[in-house]
Length: 298
Ligand code: NAD
Ligand code: MG
Image (cartoon, rainbow, N blue to C red; front, side):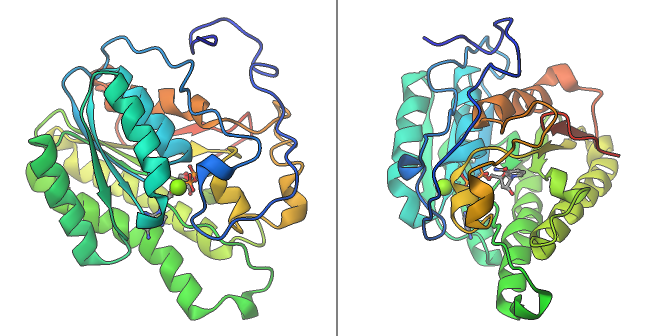
Protein backbone atom coordinates (compact mmCIF):
# COMPACT_ATOMS: atom_id res chain seq x y z
CA UNK A 1 0.00 0.00 0.00
CA UNK A 2 1.37 3.43 -0.95
CA UNK A 3 1.14 6.33 1.51
CA UNK A 4 -2.54 6.96 2.23
CA UNK A 5 -4.10 10.41 1.86
CA UNK A 6 -3.50 11.25 5.52
CA UNK A 7 0.28 10.73 5.44
CA UNK A 8 2.20 13.92 6.27
CA UNK A 9 4.18 14.66 3.10
CA UNK A 10 5.41 17.65 1.10
CA UNK A 11 2.64 18.43 -1.45
CA UNK A 12 5.28 19.56 -3.96
CA UNK A 13 6.79 16.08 -4.14
CA UNK A 14 3.89 13.96 -2.92
CA UNK A 15 3.25 13.04 -6.56
CA UNK A 16 5.78 13.15 -9.38
CA UNK A 17 5.81 16.11 -11.68
CA UNK A 18 4.04 14.79 -14.77
CA UNK A 19 6.31 15.16 -17.80
CA UNK A 20 4.46 13.07 -20.33
CA UNK A 21 5.47 12.42 -23.91
CA UNK A 22 3.31 13.97 -26.59
CA UNK A 23 0.37 11.68 -27.17
CA UNK A 24 -3.08 11.68 -28.68
CA UNK A 25 -6.17 9.49 -28.39
CA UNK A 26 -9.56 9.89 -30.08
CA UNK A 27 -12.34 11.04 -27.70
CA UNK A 28 -13.20 9.92 -25.07
CA UNK A 29 -9.95 7.95 -24.79
CA UNK A 30 -8.94 5.21 -22.39
CA UNK A 31 -7.30 5.72 -19.02
CA UNK A 32 -5.56 2.39 -19.56
CA UNK A 33 -3.60 3.92 -22.46
CA UNK A 34 -2.58 7.17 -20.74
CA UNK A 35 1.23 7.58 -20.43
CA UNK A 36 2.14 7.85 -17.59
CA UNK A 37 -0.90 6.28 -15.93
CA UNK A 38 -2.95 8.59 -13.71
CA UNK A 39 -3.07 7.89 -9.97
CA UNK A 40 -6.69 7.17 -9.04
CA UNK A 41 -5.87 6.27 -5.45
CA UNK A 42 -6.12 2.55 -6.23
CA UNK A 43 -3.13 1.82 -4.00
CA UNK A 44 -3.53 4.61 -1.47
CA UNK A 45 -7.06 5.77 -0.64
CA UNK A 46 -8.01 4.67 2.88
CA UNK A 47 -11.67 4.84 3.84
CA UNK A 48 -13.09 5.26 7.33
CA UNK A 49 -16.86 4.86 7.01
CA UNK A 50 -17.57 8.46 6.08
CA UNK A 51 -20.21 7.43 3.51
CA UNK A 52 -21.49 4.24 5.13
CA UNK A 53 -24.61 2.93 3.40
CA UNK A 54 -24.81 5.76 0.89
CA UNK A 55 -26.05 5.30 -2.70
CA UNK A 56 -24.16 7.32 -5.29
CA UNK A 57 -24.48 7.96 -9.01
CA UNK A 58 -21.26 9.25 -10.60
CA UNK A 59 -21.02 10.34 -14.23
CA UNK A 60 -17.72 9.88 -16.04
CA UNK A 61 -16.86 7.28 -13.39
CA UNK A 62 -14.74 5.09 -15.67
CA UNK A 63 -11.62 7.26 -15.67
CA UNK A 64 -9.82 10.23 -14.21
CA UNK A 65 -11.49 12.25 -11.47
CA UNK A 66 -14.80 10.36 -11.58
CA UNK A 67 -13.03 7.02 -11.23
CA UNK A 68 -11.00 8.27 -8.26
CA UNK A 69 -14.26 9.45 -6.68
CA UNK A 70 -15.89 6.04 -7.27
CA UNK A 71 -12.97 4.24 -5.58
CA UNK A 72 -12.99 6.65 -2.62
CA UNK A 73 -16.76 6.55 -2.20
CA UNK A 74 -16.75 2.73 -2.18
CA UNK A 75 -13.94 2.60 0.39
CA UNK A 76 -15.96 5.05 2.52
CA UNK A 77 -18.89 2.62 2.41
CA UNK A 78 -21.07 3.74 -0.52
CA UNK A 79 -22.61 1.66 -3.30
CA UNK A 80 -21.90 3.22 -6.68
CA UNK A 81 -23.60 3.45 -10.09
CA UNK A 82 -21.06 4.29 -12.79
CA UNK A 83 -22.05 6.29 -15.90
CA UNK A 84 -19.69 6.41 -18.91
CA UNK A 85 -19.66 6.10 -22.70
CA UNK A 86 -19.97 2.60 -24.20
CA UNK A 87 -16.47 2.75 -25.73
CA UNK A 88 -15.04 3.09 -22.20
CA UNK A 89 -16.33 -0.31 -21.06
CA UNK A 90 -12.88 -1.71 -20.23
CA UNK A 91 -11.94 1.28 -18.04
CA UNK A 92 -15.33 1.08 -16.31
CA UNK A 93 -14.97 -2.62 -15.58
CA UNK A 94 -11.62 -2.01 -13.90
CA UNK A 95 -13.16 0.62 -11.61
CA UNK A 96 -16.19 -1.57 -10.89
CA UNK A 97 -13.84 -4.35 -9.77
CA UNK A 98 -12.12 -1.95 -7.37
CA UNK A 99 -15.51 -0.88 -5.96
CA UNK A 100 -16.43 -4.53 -5.42
CA UNK A 101 -13.03 -5.21 -3.84
CA UNK A 102 -14.05 -2.62 -1.27
CA UNK A 103 -17.09 -4.77 -0.48
CA UNK A 104 -19.60 -2.44 -2.14
CA UNK A 105 -21.99 -2.74 -5.09
CA UNK A 106 -20.93 -1.40 -8.50
CA UNK A 107 -23.53 -0.96 -11.25
CA UNK A 108 -22.34 -0.31 -14.79
CA UNK A 109 -24.57 2.06 -16.77
CA UNK A 110 -23.03 2.87 -20.18
CA UNK A 111 -24.71 5.49 -22.38
CA UNK A 112 -24.36 8.91 -23.98
CA UNK A 113 -25.86 11.47 -21.58
CA UNK A 114 -25.95 14.31 -24.12
CA UNK A 115 -29.68 13.82 -24.66
CA UNK A 116 -32.51 14.39 -22.19
CA UNK A 117 -33.92 10.93 -22.70
CA UNK A 118 -30.61 9.17 -22.02
CA UNK A 119 -30.05 11.30 -18.92
CA UNK A 120 -33.46 10.40 -17.54
CA UNK A 121 -32.94 6.72 -18.32
CA UNK A 122 -29.59 6.83 -16.53
CA UNK A 123 -31.15 8.18 -13.33
CA UNK A 124 -34.04 5.68 -13.46
CA UNK A 125 -31.61 2.79 -13.92
CA UNK A 126 -29.33 4.00 -11.14
CA UNK A 127 -32.24 4.35 -8.71
CA UNK A 128 -33.48 0.88 -9.57
CA UNK A 129 -30.07 -0.79 -9.25
CA UNK A 130 -29.04 1.05 -6.07
CA UNK A 131 -32.47 0.82 -4.46
CA UNK A 132 -32.58 4.62 -4.08
CA UNK A 133 -30.23 7.56 -4.45
CA UNK A 134 -28.75 10.08 -1.99
CA UNK A 135 -25.57 11.24 -3.71
CA UNK A 136 -25.16 12.59 -7.23
CA UNK A 137 -21.80 13.51 -8.73
CA UNK A 138 -22.10 15.34 -12.05
CA UNK A 139 -18.59 14.87 -13.40
CA UNK A 140 -18.78 13.83 -17.07
CA UNK A 141 -17.30 16.48 -19.30
CA UNK A 142 -16.23 17.36 -22.82
CA UNK A 143 -13.16 19.51 -23.50
CA UNK A 144 -11.86 20.00 -27.03
CA UNK A 145 -9.62 22.97 -27.76
CA UNK A 146 -10.11 25.25 -30.76
CA UNK A 147 -7.67 28.04 -31.65
CA UNK A 148 -10.07 30.41 -33.41
CA UNK A 149 -13.69 31.22 -32.73
CA UNK A 150 -14.37 31.16 -36.47
CA UNK A 151 -13.34 27.49 -36.46
CA UNK A 152 -15.50 26.52 -33.47
CA UNK A 153 -18.41 24.82 -35.20
CA UNK A 154 -21.99 25.23 -34.04
CA UNK A 155 -22.09 21.46 -33.57
CA UNK A 156 -19.00 21.42 -31.33
CA UNK A 157 -20.28 24.32 -29.23
CA UNK A 158 -23.64 22.60 -28.89
CA UNK A 159 -22.14 19.23 -27.93
CA UNK A 160 -19.95 20.81 -25.23
CA UNK A 161 -23.00 22.60 -23.80
CA UNK A 162 -25.11 19.44 -23.96
CA UNK A 163 -22.52 17.28 -22.22
CA UNK A 164 -21.34 19.72 -19.56
CA UNK A 165 -24.41 21.83 -18.80
CA UNK A 166 -27.61 20.26 -20.17
CA UNK A 167 -26.82 16.74 -18.94
CA UNK A 168 -26.15 18.14 -15.45
CA UNK A 169 -29.56 19.86 -15.60
CA UNK A 170 -31.40 16.82 -16.95
CA UNK A 171 -29.78 14.39 -14.52
CA UNK A 172 -30.25 16.65 -11.49
CA UNK A 173 -33.90 17.25 -12.37
CA UNK A 174 -34.56 13.53 -12.82
CA UNK A 175 -32.76 12.70 -9.56
CA UNK A 176 -34.62 15.19 -7.37
CA UNK A 177 -37.79 13.15 -6.71
CA UNK A 178 -35.59 10.36 -5.37
CA UNK A 179 -33.27 12.38 -3.12
CA UNK A 180 -34.15 12.33 0.59
CA UNK A 181 -33.20 15.16 2.96
CA UNK A 182 -29.50 14.77 3.74
CA UNK A 183 -28.62 14.09 0.11
CA UNK A 184 -25.70 15.75 -1.62
CA UNK A 185 -25.22 16.87 -5.22
CA UNK A 186 -21.66 17.67 -6.31
CA UNK A 187 -20.93 19.26 -9.66
CA UNK A 188 -17.55 19.46 -11.34
CA UNK A 189 -16.54 22.91 -12.49
CA UNK A 190 -12.95 24.07 -13.18
CA UNK A 191 -10.39 26.79 -12.68
CA UNK A 192 -11.37 27.52 -16.31
CA UNK A 193 -14.49 29.21 -14.90
CA UNK A 194 -12.24 32.01 -13.60
CA UNK A 195 -9.13 31.80 -15.79
CA UNK A 196 -10.33 30.73 -19.22
CA UNK A 197 -7.78 29.51 -21.75
CA UNK A 198 -8.08 31.35 -25.07
CA UNK A 199 -8.46 28.00 -26.85
CA UNK A 200 -11.23 26.69 -24.54
CA UNK A 201 -13.98 29.26 -25.08
CA UNK A 202 -16.88 26.80 -25.16
CA UNK A 203 -15.54 24.60 -22.35
CA UNK A 204 -14.68 27.49 -20.02
CA UNK A 205 -18.13 28.97 -20.61
CA UNK A 206 -19.76 25.72 -19.47
CA UNK A 207 -17.65 25.66 -16.33
CA UNK A 208 -18.79 29.17 -15.36
CA UNK A 209 -22.37 28.03 -15.99
CA UNK A 210 -21.83 24.97 -13.77
CA UNK A 211 -20.61 27.22 -10.96
CA UNK A 212 -23.67 29.46 -11.16
CA UNK A 213 -26.07 26.51 -11.59
CA UNK A 214 -24.52 25.08 -8.41
CA UNK A 215 -25.09 28.25 -6.40
CA UNK A 216 -28.65 28.78 -7.69
CA UNK A 217 -29.78 25.19 -7.15
CA UNK A 218 -28.06 25.15 -3.75
CA UNK A 219 -30.10 28.17 -2.69
CA UNK A 220 -33.29 26.59 -3.97
CA UNK A 221 -32.81 23.07 -2.57
CA UNK A 222 -31.35 23.94 0.83
CA UNK A 223 -34.77 24.07 2.52
CA UNK A 224 -35.40 20.52 1.30
CA UNK A 225 -32.22 19.36 3.03
CA UNK A 226 -30.43 18.73 -0.26
CA UNK A 227 -26.98 20.32 -0.41
CA UNK A 228 -25.46 21.30 -3.74
CA UNK A 229 -21.75 22.14 -4.01
CA UNK A 230 -19.01 22.00 -6.62
CA UNK A 231 -15.38 21.00 -6.91
CA UNK A 232 -13.15 23.13 -9.16
CA UNK A 233 -10.07 21.15 -10.16
CA UNK A 234 -7.00 22.81 -11.63
CA UNK A 235 -4.79 20.94 -14.10
CA UNK A 236 -5.25 17.24 -13.31
CA UNK A 237 -3.51 14.51 -15.29
CA UNK A 238 -6.31 12.63 -17.07
CA UNK A 239 -7.13 11.28 -20.50
CA UNK A 240 -9.27 14.38 -21.11
CA UNK A 241 -6.04 16.28 -21.79
CA UNK A 242 -4.77 13.95 -24.52
CA UNK A 243 -8.10 13.67 -26.38
CA UNK A 244 -7.68 17.22 -27.78
CA UNK A 245 -8.31 18.84 -24.40
CA UNK A 246 -5.02 20.70 -24.94
CA UNK A 247 -2.78 21.39 -27.92
CA UNK A 248 -0.08 18.67 -28.04
CA UNK A 249 2.76 21.08 -27.18
CA UNK A 250 1.10 21.97 -23.87
CA UNK A 251 0.85 18.38 -22.67
CA UNK A 252 4.55 17.91 -21.91
CA UNK A 253 4.55 20.74 -19.34
CA UNK A 254 0.97 20.26 -18.17
CA UNK A 255 0.44 21.85 -14.73
CA UNK A 256 4.04 23.03 -14.32
CA UNK A 257 2.94 26.67 -13.98
CA UNK A 258 0.86 26.13 -10.82
CA UNK A 259 2.27 27.35 -7.46
CA UNK A 260 2.90 23.69 -6.52
CA UNK A 261 4.77 23.32 -9.79
CA UNK A 262 3.08 20.13 -10.92
CA UNK A 263 -0.21 18.76 -12.24
CA UNK A 264 -2.61 17.23 -9.77
CA UNK A 265 -3.62 13.58 -9.76
CA UNK A 266 -7.24 12.35 -9.68
CA UNK A 267 -6.42 10.78 -6.30
CA UNK A 268 -6.01 14.31 -4.91
CA UNK A 269 -9.49 15.35 -6.07
CA UNK A 270 -11.42 12.49 -4.46
CA UNK A 271 -11.18 13.73 -0.83
CA UNK A 272 -12.89 17.00 -1.81
CA UNK A 273 -15.87 15.04 -3.16
CA UNK A 274 -15.93 12.79 -0.10
CA UNK A 275 -16.05 15.84 2.17
CA UNK A 276 -18.91 17.44 0.23
CA UNK A 277 -20.85 14.15 0.02
CA UNK A 278 -20.49 13.36 3.70
CA UNK A 279 -22.79 14.68 6.43
CA UNK A 280 -19.71 16.28 8.03
CA UNK A 281 -20.15 19.17 5.54
CA UNK A 282 -23.77 19.75 6.63
CA UNK A 283 -23.37 23.57 6.78
CA UNK A 284 -21.50 23.79 3.45
CA UNK A 285 -24.01 24.79 0.77
CA UNK A 286 -23.43 26.39 -2.64
CA UNK A 287 -19.67 26.30 -2.18
CA UNK A 288 -17.01 25.74 -4.83
CA UNK A 289 -14.07 23.87 -3.37
CA UNK A 290 -10.97 24.69 -5.42
CA UNK A 291 -8.39 21.92 -5.68
CA UNK A 292 -5.99 23.50 -8.13
CA UNK A 293 -2.44 23.53 -6.81
CA UNK A 294 -2.66 27.10 -5.61
CA UNK A 295 -3.97 29.08 -8.58
CA UNK A 296 -5.70 32.16 -7.09
CA UNK A 297 -9.48 32.26 -7.60
CA UNK A 298 -12.11 34.89 -6.80
P1 NAD B 1 -11.96 11.91 -18.12
O1 NAD B 1 -11.89 11.92 -19.58
O2 NAD B 1 -11.30 10.81 -17.41
O3 NAD B 1 -13.48 11.95 -17.65
C1 NAD B 1 -14.49 12.55 -18.41
C2 NAD B 1 -15.60 11.53 -18.58
O4 NAD B 1 -16.75 12.17 -19.12
C3 NAD B 1 -15.27 10.41 -19.56
O5 NAD B 1 -14.64 9.33 -18.93
C4 NAD B 1 -16.65 10.02 -20.09
O6 NAD B 1 -17.11 8.86 -19.45
C5 NAD B 1 -17.56 11.17 -19.67
N1 NAD B 1 -18.32 11.68 -20.81
C6 NAD B 1 -17.91 12.59 -21.73
N2 NAD B 1 -18.89 12.77 -22.63
C7 NAD B 1 -19.93 11.96 -22.27
C8 NAD B 1 -21.22 11.70 -22.81
N3 NAD B 1 -21.67 12.33 -23.91
N4 NAD B 1 -22.00 10.79 -22.19
C9 NAD B 1 -21.57 10.14 -21.08
N5 NAD B 1 -20.36 10.37 -20.51
C10 NAD B 1 -19.56 11.27 -21.11
O7 NAD B 1 -11.38 13.33 -17.64
P2 NAD B 1 -11.41 14.09 -16.22
O8 NAD B 1 -10.36 15.11 -16.34
O9 NAD B 1 -11.41 13.16 -15.09
O10 NAD B 1 -12.80 14.87 -16.30
C11 NAD B 1 -13.79 14.79 -15.29
C12 NAD B 1 -14.36 16.17 -15.04
O11 NAD B 1 -13.36 16.99 -14.46
C13 NAD B 1 -14.86 16.89 -16.29
O12 NAD B 1 -16.07 17.55 -15.99
C14 NAD B 1 -13.77 17.94 -16.51
O13 NAD B 1 -14.28 19.07 -17.18
C15 NAD B 1 -13.39 18.24 -15.10
N6 NAD B 1 -12.10 18.91 -14.94
C16 NAD B 1 -10.95 18.27 -15.31
C17 NAD B 1 -9.75 18.94 -15.18
C18 NAD B 1 -8.45 18.32 -15.59
O14 NAD B 1 -7.44 19.01 -15.63
N7 NAD B 1 -8.41 17.03 -15.88
C19 NAD B 1 -9.72 20.24 -14.64
C20 NAD B 1 -10.91 20.84 -14.26
C21 NAD B 1 -12.09 20.17 -14.42
MG1 MG C 1 -13.12 7.96 -19.60
